[in-house]
Length: 122
Image (tube, rainbow, N blue to C red; front, side):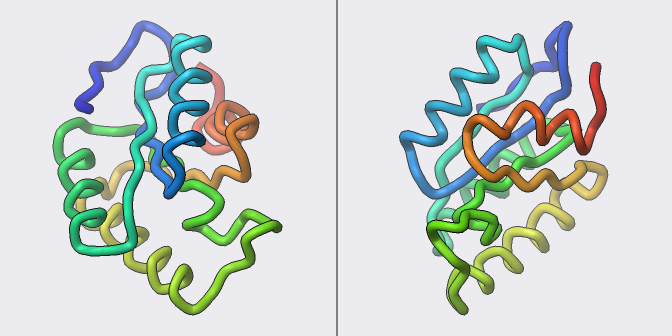
């Protein structure tokens, strides 16, 4: 999903567990003229490889982490497994995209405000 920098906005890679949420976030990005997109990853080696592939394809200003992965979703409290996954993806982001800011997103409606909170307005 390599994404060129658009004339508006920051270049942000979003990721999470649920395809329908990724699509909702991609729609918000399109509507806002935001460069970037959201992908679905899984809590396994294939998911880690997908995240690494995307992080290496483009230089991102920020990485938006979905609420299920980050433990920010009050309807899905973190477990030992999701906490381990969150720790692992943080280290992957730090390793593969050390200049990218990490953005925690609570729900699809929060993605653009969260980007603004962390990266500022552009």
